[in-house]
Length: 422
Ligand code: CTP
Image (cartoon, rainbow, N blue to C red; front, side, top):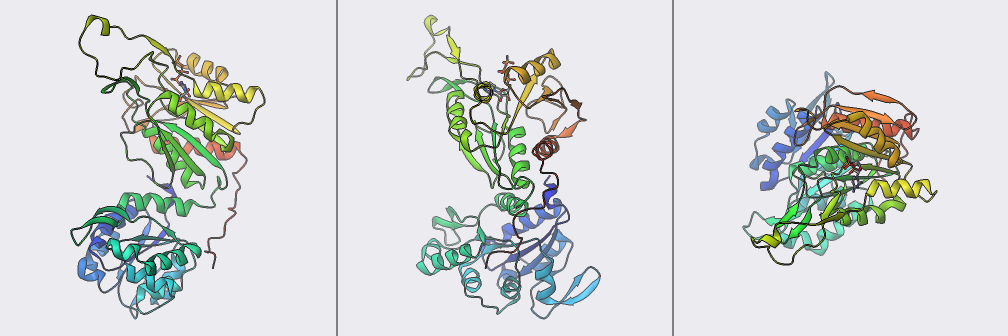
């Protein structure tokens, strides 16, 4: 769930391309997140997907005609002016080469372009076209002009195109557009200007080219934390071991496999990090040697000797203690099966954390691969809070809300104007 979208007004423009069918999923995703979605379709878009499809999904009228009247808060208003003033975010998906060209040249010859021209808020375009159209200097120039005005772009991606050819030009997936939309709406939020680094997933320590030592972590909690930080306006970095969930969009991803690689990535980012949250399940030990060849069944291969991996949060804690540069806030997780409180308090102290989030991984509603979590917070200074059962998204949002409070950003009004730079 993305509370950032609740009650927000999304203007969804759809221009004419086969990718228009994907915007049905996009409109549904926004509607399910409690956003109010107003759809504008060009006449050619309406040839690919019937407006009634979007009407049914969004439960709101769909506009295609410049001279149509528009219902707004119980009033009948004429076309584009009312539409343009209402939106928190204007998305055009798919955005064809023609639509991009019209926007870049300030043309206003149909409802979509008129509305775009009279709109001053954040705008996100998801281009879709044949590769040669996308890479054409005219399109590149138009895209650059729009970028210079502060318009955001997502995609296009490599893939199979309408012509049957494979190349760059495929519209971004609806889930990715949705994610980047959350980021754009969250800009200027209470964590604006801060860098939040999150570790996630379970590290894999190689035994040989086909086997590894791992754990049950899916990365769900870390991905939820990254989304929550992004939606509050933070520049978010996710250093992640392999995930079994869709990685969050609008976040810088740094994929790693081993504890050593995760350690290296975090240390490299540390000087620029304001808040560090360690949600990864990092292996404590790795095989002393990993074979270059697949190990065969044999008595000498029956025993694997192990050595310690670096402890990332411990190292950060030590550096902070020694007065070196470090994040303003460091948060750890304690996934425990026994002696819960004692183990959590030990980690808080030993790793010099500001806050540790304890969860009992033996509880069926609170462990790996489930969508819920029941956690207890232990803060440096002695504060302790047991939170009720929540979804991992809600736990993540509550943790980030705590970050906002601890950094004194509760009354943050936002530093950025919602108007694009023109
Ligand atoms: N952690 C880390 N680097 C490691 C091990 C753990 O950064 N090598 C972080 C985890 O991301 C988590 C916290 O430290 O935020 C606690 O991890 P956990 O595995 O529960 O504890 P350990 O320190 O490994 O202690 P133990 O295995 O004795 O429980």
